[in-house]
Length: 217
Image 1: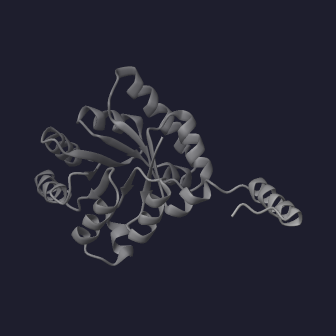
Image 2: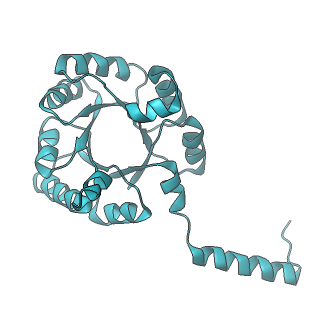
Image 3: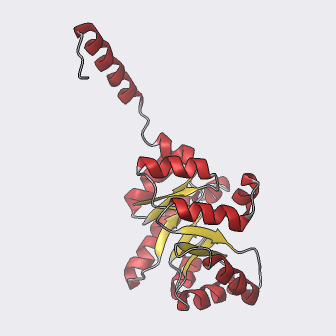
């Protein structure tokens, strides 16, 4: 499974990249707003940090304007994935942009039927939102499973990018189902390494090495 960081915080992105845990980045207008920076400027800086796909989202709602914005975003760097919403206009923009050779991430997916349409429109990534479905008492993981089955039935190459991930269990469950990618806040990604038994075991090893006077350097 590929790990994308869902953030526009360049310091957090740089830290994860240096740890070797990052395969890409996803951004959206809300994350850009939190960064307090110009969208083109911060997106270019992120693209310079990571080698993998960096999703940059259009803000237009009409297809021709989405296409124009998508081309401007794609010109920032070769690893830009233009992010468009799962609407009919977004699907039209996806088809045009993908046929022009650009990576496209179709976002705000909440059903397997929507995911099927995105794949047929040539999406590079489909972003089903797990957490937001959980918020309204629906099973976000069930959606990941349904999309996986549909895509496997027809050998679609569109990658399932599990989004709106909020917990380490979301990551585990998405990986077990077979999502190709997950995107999560940096804090969730880092917390995957945490376990109380790891901390307990390390404390015991350190105490024993100190008592024994063990030194390596």
